[in-house]
Length: 292
Ligand SMILES: CC(C)(COP(=O)(O)OP(=O)(O)OC[C@H]1O[C@@H](n2cnc3c(N)ncnc32)[C@H](O)[C@@H]1OP(=O)(O)O)[C@@H](O)C(=O)NCCC(=O)NCCS
Picture 1 (tube, protein in one colour):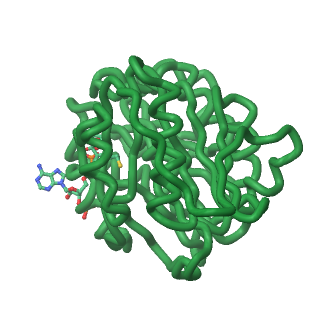
Picture 2 (tube, rainbow, N blue to C red; picture 1 turned 180 degrees about the vertical axis):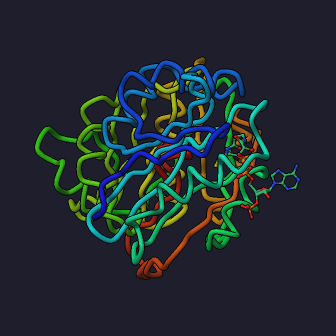
């Protein structure tokens, strides 16, 4: 794949260059200005798997954007931010064009705000669904009854390959390094077994203003609900966020756990993903809106 290269700036315009760890602090300042909840440590965790660009004017970072490559054929794009004072000057378009360079032939996923959607559509992204972002102070909820032969249990120390395979099946993209990182840093990871075989899992992680539940991988909505109910109760009394696929139909139930919907970003794709196999693993809640 083509490495990220710095652009030569036209006179008077913003200069694009590859993002480095030194750009994390000004990038975090841009997200904080928008009241996005990411902490510096959240930026560092996502950047550890990323390639990115920043735009500078007079040596000041005014825009930032990242991409994550999952194997040779898949990628996500996120954390695309242009400082409010610099919008409408095609900096967003230039950042996206730079990030997409080298991803020809790849399937690329992103979650769009209303401001970003037109930009992404003009670059070939199409809507494939919506997320519902729920957050609030989690309340203890009744455990969800599981069918015979099914159980929830903590993830074991040697289960990383099984969780990576479930995530890859559910997301349709191989994200081994990310899942390893998340498993290592999650406060809790619970596995759903059917007939002693792992069929799903869910993580509770520190993120933003408190905790996030995600990813949630399960064979169906009822199993996803059982995994989420367990982690919501584990985190009762604490600020908790979950970004769930709207097609899951779990929104009303999530509201009843103290987590109202606060936003509905659009899931967009350039390229194609295989349709989930019936009874196979599905992704009910994402890792973050940036990573998918
Ligand atoms: C989304 C965002 C990154 C766009 O950045 P930007 O630098 O303003 O984008 P551009 O100037 O390249 O404009 C994007 C498109 O909108 C059009 N546009 C920009 N300002 C416009 C305006 N005032 N009226 C109509 N169209 C406008 C441009 O013509 C451009 O179209 P094109 O892609 O076909 O050329 C920026 O609005 C932003 O940071 N928003 C907040 C964070 C966010 O929502 N990020 C997206 C997360 S997925």
